[in-house]
Image 1 (cartoon, rainbow, N blue to C red):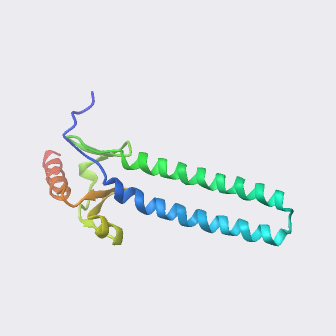
Image 2: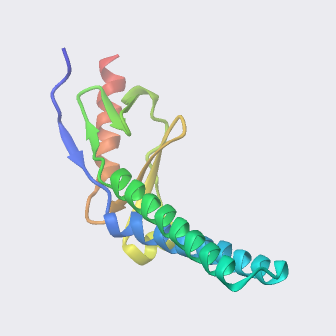
Image 3: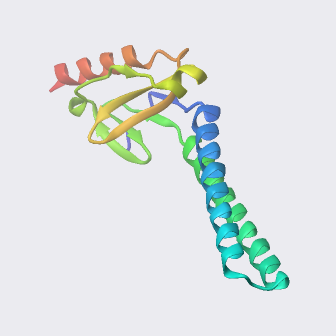
Length: 149
């Protein structure tokens, strides 16, 4: 029997998507420039060059689109809190295993007004809006779990 859901929160989608999209576009542009440089060095005919340019550009756009869809899907997965554990990306972490709930902020977190919490075992609660006071809630759940055991 599965426990009843106590609380659920989602990531701030703009914080999760904007940096990923910018990185994908930057890397795709660098890759495309590399293709153009190689084409000029190969001295191919214009028709072959044109086909290769369009195919590579289409492939890069498709890869960027897939990356954006995967990032959006990942950002829409909620963090679910139950009586004795929480789930992050369908992985369970018991509250007794949480050692630290200190919020951390990087440059993008400051820009998008979010924070992250490293809850343990390579698990993070990322892109949490600053108006969601999750740290105190996690501390209460951890202390309750330690008292119960």
